[in-house]
Image (cartoon, rainbow, N blue to C red):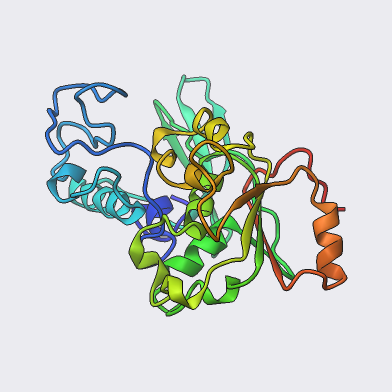
Length: 278
């Protein structure tokens, strides 16, 4: 695991839950039934031999990232396999004996470790995050900001600002939920709506311009959330809108000339191909 703790990806953002996962957790489920969309099985199963399953303790339809991360950590810990933490995938190749050799690098020491296995599953994701600086931050940094209990008022730094979200996909939708106040309540700490919100969220790269178009291109979970903030056909909630811009250069010029009160750029791991930061 590239993270330093079990349940890595879902537990890396802090002590507070910051987003809900996209698949439903069925309260009544059968471990022997394969979990498929539209079926009776649990889509978030850990297998028939796992001691802990999300429906055992999750009440809502969509578990939070901490629900999934903690269940993963508990199941992994009691199952007893060795886990290499804080290690990044470095290289891999197929050996003459038919096995797969994966090479990992410990991030703190840069020491490499080789593992030979009959089978390997690579779930490393796509893309790499851009560097932060000035008034920009990555989506992971944003989620860590809202997930940290040290941040008593996490929304405060964005109050009155134009937030430009650059990218697309589920990660972008999750970040959009944060600014539409559709994230788990715990993520906002003491930042109640009366203390203010971002002035507007400008989403660069989303494949939609209206509420109905967004609903046709995202998972059902977002239809009752961020889709309501898009213009047209039951969208356009008061005081807060999602704007879609295809060009970012003019916005950056406004920021440099201080025509905008303040602006934050949120970068996804794979930015929109039309955007150039030159």
